Image 1 (tube, rainbow, N blue to C red):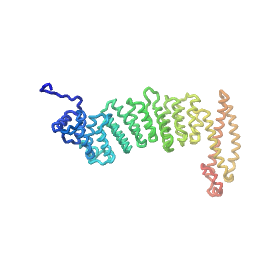
Image 2: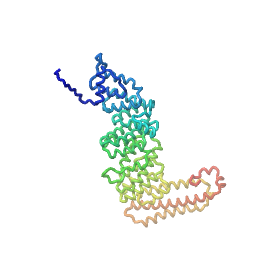
Image 3: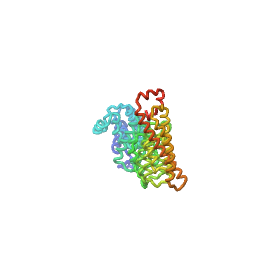
Image 4: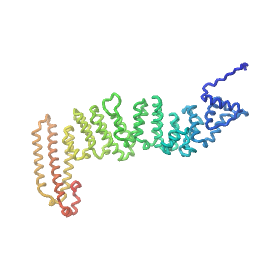
Length: 492
């Protein structure tokens, strides 16, 4: 228009670069016609949109329409051609912006992976890559390395599409672990936070039983050194809690947060157990609950020796699980015993709060004997233990008394009434010897000593009876007839 000989046209933000410009120029000089290959279709599509080559003037066909029509044959592309097209999309378009061509390529990629019908499964973008896949990956995960180039936003799209098409959740979780390890090698701190947050959100969409506990704790250790959002940390803890029965004691020994005096992160373990109980409140099996109880008992033994662990936290750990979770309370008693020994200055009220979770009916005889003679425990606890022991032994004697008295030597039963009187006399002797500051405490201690004496005598009688029953010939026991059914298991 202005008769200028040197005319310059500047294309701002032409991301396609020199290669894209050359392809468009060829189309223009060839009257709008060109051969579109799978490796060029993405580049031409984006260039046509940028240069507004969207209309058909009759002489020159619309370039944008040509690129879209070429996508009709995407089902015949090779796997490597799909990967090249996907890389082009990633470079030219952010995953937050939807694109028809990107959606079609992703749909085809996921479809190939879902059916495992790939023209050349190991025909990767390079010969070395395909060789590594053949050697290191089983058939189900041959595609892992081929998709590691995707940025985290595209990974988010890909995984959600996989889940919607019922991909195996275990395979998906393994791929996410592989992706995290690969991308962390060169990522910045900000990129690492973004990657780990997306992965946590994706894992929350998977079936809980498909998530290995080792994988979840590995991600947790990574998050401890990153500034990950609280919401993501909470999601991760809930995921770990749902699989807590798979964990071992080594997983729970997480160092306490900065500026905390205690050795291990007790608050974390409390949150994990509560997440487990909440997750399985309706359908958790007794076996899984017992595994968690055994794990927590081991953790209690580990932290009981920590002099900085306050009684309220230890009591919370002791009572975090219901009584039915444990068949035996011996390990729980061991942890409480260690804690009371390390924290010798606790008042009676705090001791009682810690000990209230102990079920004496689930303690072994040795544990009951140890507890009854343990001065670190409150006196009221010892009295309850003696009552429990005495009740057990008296029930044992009631079972033995159903047998004919002719089968036993008489002095035992003759001595029983004499020793009962002697045990009551000993209560008075103990009372005279003890000089206590208050009548209430004196009464407790007298009662305690008397019960101890009584339990000792009952245990002695039980031992003698067991010895004598062992010496009875089989013929004499068989002569008892139906009365033999009253023989207690302990004496049989």
